[in-house]
Length: 119
Image (cartoon, rainbow, N blue to C red; front, side, top):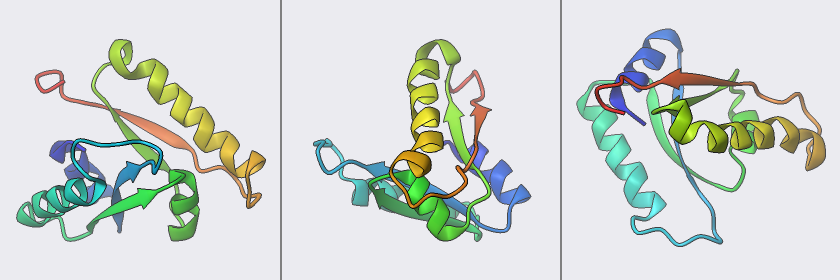
């Protein structure tokens, strides 16, 4: 998650969870734990005290319900590059609670555009 987006979210919300999502069926070059640790060091060194770096295995929407999240934020580099995959994840996050349970109101997704200089 780009640090500029986390700064903006930290200024708006009491608590921000910067989620590193992993899928047990996939193999990663850098482990979820290592990515979470990098994210934690970044946010701590930037003094973002209300940002919590967490690793989530499984569905992010379930974690969002567990912590009482109001919405999910997704950083998008460009809609041309990331749009289709981001929309697929949005549909999963909306349909998951209805199809897989526990039956709860879906947590909406909001998209944040990255600074084009860094996209």
